[in-house]
Length: 178
Image (cartoon, rainbow, N blue to C red; front, top):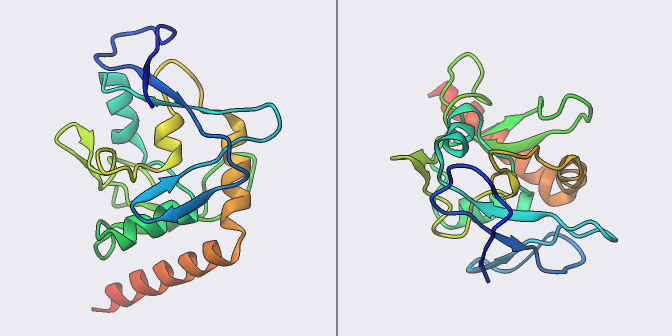
């Protein structure tokens, strides 16, 4: 349930926040009912929806990262065409971890630039409930919580995470040969 948030300053046309449900871990109960649990002890990350110019610039600068289950859902729902996803190794200045993320528009560094899913001023994944977690917790006037990157590192160091990394690496290598 989304609630109007009086705590988000700035030029937002739409500014809502939703506390993430209390769940033990990242999860998916079906591809049509994706749920995201990011709670650990007393820390709860908030999700935001904002379409102001500053938030749109985030999508134009760098594609957001998601969990393996979020990326798997994007693929399963048919949004990830060949080369829409890439394997990214440079995801955090402090933590070293590898993820699969949407491709950016920069040819010299596809982890940077406008996200492939950013069309006509908004994320096409948002309205279908598939927007990756980094994009859901990012907001124009706050830093993305550091805890998120620890969660992502742990989530991608799983069997599913490693399988997706290998599958996307193989797919992108095969498409380069063609």
